Structures are given as structure tokens and as C-alpha cells.
Image (cartoon, rainbow, N blue to C red; front, top):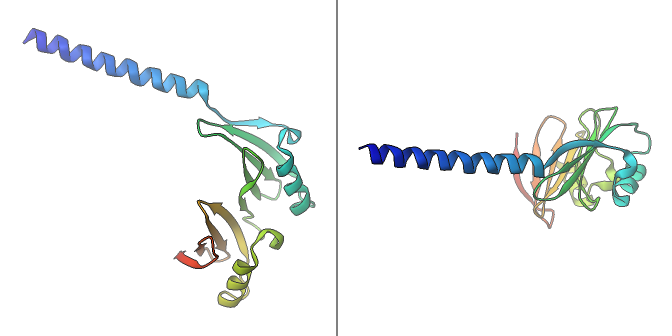
Length: 155
């Protein structure tokens, strides 16, 4: 009986050490949402901001450096934000209180929204795994595949 308790205690202790080590390593390896200067953004990201958000004032910029890679976020004083991948390509544009610049919305998505939801604006646009997600005023989320065919609607 004492042997099995000692063995069980040893196993529990070993598991706790492994989990603790993994957690500690993760904490030191990741650099979650560290503020950076605007000038530290990749050139492609700075170009995107100056072209599509020229009238906006940058509130802050952050770098999320995790195990998968780098991700940059630019937040504007208006509350809008843009997320970029490590190379500076935009991944998500969220314009909560206004609308996404039409220059970055594919024409097929613009046309679909105009035809099926007249008067609605696209407030958020996301590119993910070959799909496009467009959130419109009123809260509907429209998902398009890589050929811009509507594949899902969420409310």
C-alpha cells in the first residue's frame, strides 16, 4: 500500500513539474502584445495604413510575438484597428464606428452587400484560411470562399 502511494505521489509530482516547466517556458518565449513604435511596423503595413487610413490618428501599435509567429495591431483614436501578419500583410480591419475603406473590399463582396443589404456598410473585414468574413451594419457576418461565393451567414 505504501509503495503505491509513494509511486502515485511521484507521478503527480513529475506531472506538476512538467506542466510548470511548460508554462514557464511559454511565458518567457511569448511576448504578448508588447507596445512598439509605429516605425517598427513592416513597410507593407505602414504603406497600407498611409494609403487606407491617411486621415486617422494612430493611438497605439502592438506586437504579439507568439510561438506561431509575429502579429502587429494598429489601433486608431477612432477605435478602428488593423491586424497584420509578420510580413505586414493585413489580416483584419475592424472599423466599429464607421466602415471599412472600400478600396480594400473585393468588388464581388461590395456588390453582394449592395444588392442584398442596401444601405448597409461593411464594418469589419477579415481574411482567414482562404475565406473572407465581412461584418455589416446590423451585425450580420457574411462568409465568402476564395471565389467570393457566399458560404455562410451568422447573426
